[in-house]
Length: 290
Image (cartoon, rainbow, N blue to C red; front, side):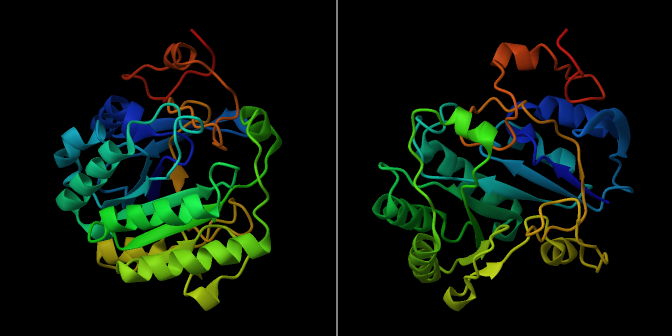
């Protein structure tokens, strides 16, 4: 079984105590986000978990106890984007995040820290020139500390548009996607990095950018040292190439406050979120405020 920790929230940044408590207990409970009355028990023993896939923008708090994962196989999807606090109000300075990325990579290995430059958003401020310059800077800083970068472009959802009120988003049309992808591929190649796309309809193969999969059977099999015969997850978006996993997170619980985040279905305050969280409980959050 592959356990996703988590597409829905940043457990390594904010809920690391809960996660390690659930590991010690041997299980977690999770609700189906489409049907909250449907509850699943997810076994978390080393015998049941083939691989953890951690997703984070700032796993520094989680890294203090990485030795507790010695009996498990795992890797990180580490998102590092170029935006300022107008889009990412809750994140530390980028230089601090880069240091965290490099420290994590030095501890667990470059192949197990996958860099996400995701999503690519175009605005008057974050234009083509801005992205190409900042991407080059990040490639320089991360070269040797990761092997792969996953890119995707901002998708328009109605609830995200509300969160982005006051910021004019420019359309990422085919020409713009292809132009920046070509430049990114050239830049990444100079630093020994491979780029893959995430759930994109545009074919970028001519630039050496393949359709990727974030929960990646190729990487999981390599880390585990055997073929797990994993199947594609048809419960994800049609263009998603990920293999099947079980997610133990919950939507609308991340405290970073990124304004473009698709996982923030509701805009709740930190106190509202934490009022529903019990580090010792089986669920990440209770079904309603306490």
